[in-house]
Image 1 (cartoon, rainbow over the protein chains, first blue to last red):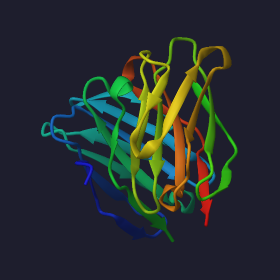
Image 2 (cartoon, rainbow over the protein chains, first blue to last red):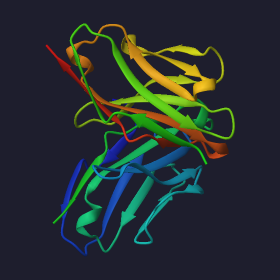
Image 3 (cartoon, rainbow over the protein chains, first blue to last red):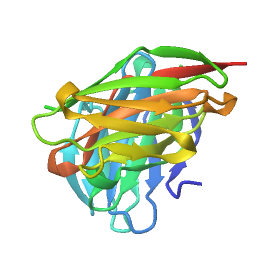
Image 4 (cartoon, one colour):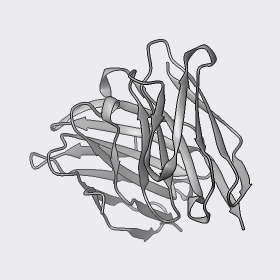
Length: 114
Length: 113
């Protein structure tokens, strides 16, 4: 157990639907990062939050949004889902110096859009 | 902008043989570099990191990596492969003050008996 909890582990949904992925960071970590992993794109950075505020944004689609709550858990919302959104979505957390110490990853949510 | 290139998407070695996974980076500032391992159906686990101290970095499970600035490389090695080393390996570079990690495309290591 890495200390980063992601739920659900698996999600199957239909095109056009909306889903919410949840992440609880490791105790004491203030930064949360979301990544999408697919066979053709590899690990793509989506978005980072630090202590409730958006810190960095990557190639995140407008249909996707995220937030970090006061208790530091984070949610990634994916809407108007398309087949191409099927992927593994990882959450990672770090202390303030994530770029120095590295991240702790959760085990991911596997999203299948049918 | 920082970037990472992993040479070889698949590497196959025999059990007991040397493991060498290649990573080259591009960075306009002194980089922080990382190697992660991903076992099937699991998240990524930090193997080791370079943060401008010793250029030869030792990690978990007998892996080590050497930072070579002149070659902009950070190759991962292990003297003797075990079957349990079969996994996907990712090299990453830290970008700027956000701490965002930019990952390479990954290298799948196969270990043959």
